[in-house]
Length: 110
Image 1 (spheres, rainbow, N blue to C red):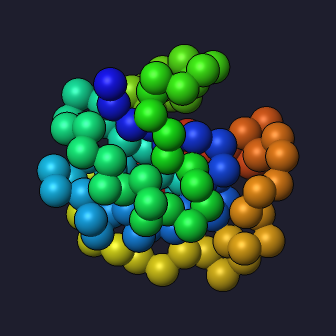
Image 2 (image 1 turned 135 degrees about the vertical axis):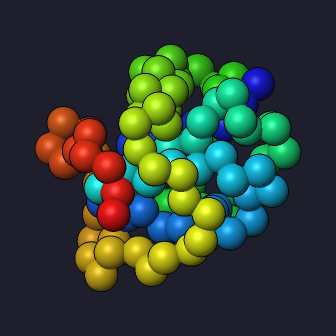
């Protein structure tokens, strides 16, 4: 088992999870984070820290797409180990449906 970041992180990009991760397995894209599944130790401390509830166990149903995306993006995005403030409009996007099709970016974070 591992944890994956899912759609609700897009355009929210809260980083509370980054601060508590004991193995620094988060990677930053332009508008979301991902978890490198080979680095995640399955501790789960990040899950309750995510205000957007965008971190799920890969054992939950229908997360194959997100696991693949986390793997792919963790290979090309920079590792992030320090908390940064979320986007100013994060709350506006929290819970919005269909964010992947509308807003997902493969660009790395800065």
